Length: 452
Image 1 (cartoon, rainbow, N blue to C red):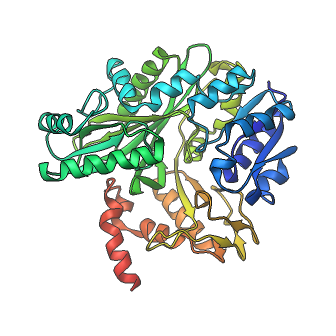
Image 2 (image 1 turned 60 degrees about the vertical axis):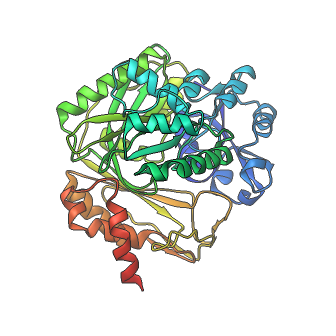
């Protein structure tokens, strides 16, 4: 086991990793920007190092500063959390070159899955279905027109190095293609440093299903079930649950086993998530892989009883999956709501000081957060305040438990998405499991009209 781990992140995920390390008896080092000097992850780590000004490009994304902090504190491993440097293959390589263990997959696996066109080809070769589209980046407007004539409309343009909805455009006709192509390339260049985009068929009313995987450094990969992530706005998830009401036990095992085999072929290790679309006929299509721990990992933890962050660390230290997970069982139903510091009608960020903060509790309720009364939500980072997770014997109990917990969750001083979550949980279509990725697109206009 590692002796000391540097946590290259902030907020609730940094605190989550510190908790896992404490249970493993591992010392921790927090890094922080000047804006986070009074944060809980700084307080609860064994050591803390300031790595720069508030802007993430000058602190949390500054590889030399992070490595320098690791070297002066003499750590033997770095956990990147999610976001920031977690899927940066160059950072993983620098860790390897500095003889510091990177708690994540090998740099080549990060690079392979981070390049969406390469990932599509690799998964297709391994037998995982993919959405019909281009084999690689679309070079220019002529190539875009030719590809569109083969794919057909509607189609979607995506950044090769993309994520989070940036560099992404839906095109429904030939007249829309070229303006959308140029816009997507411009967004991709600005967000990811490369204008490369690819194109694929747009599935009109899909469900967004993702499979949690975990691989060790001895060639074994397993799946830990699926999560339903269809409740989202502009490709940003708001609510996740497991299991999905649309996935049968047989389908879960068949698709999960196929994904695990494909990742064993590329030598994948650590936690990761394979994201798929499921069409109205129940067919799956691979869209991308996140080579890190996910924001919504507690959903899987609640139904399996596993600690995924501790498992990540143990895998990185060389332990075998058979030692970490001797038996896997799925129990009950779990739901997670992301509580963001945003206006619930306009989604405008709401930075500021929290003046009152009360967390719900009791049976089956968990809150992952680094916030507290008098904490400041800075304008520089993601607006996530907390993750509210519940577990029930079945979906009906989980929904009732989440509704109760949302009513008892108090945050004052900043606006939050709690009112929106309460409306979603009360929606009869959601309760019946009848929804897709466009659920919120249809629902928000009614919410906004009611707020006027």
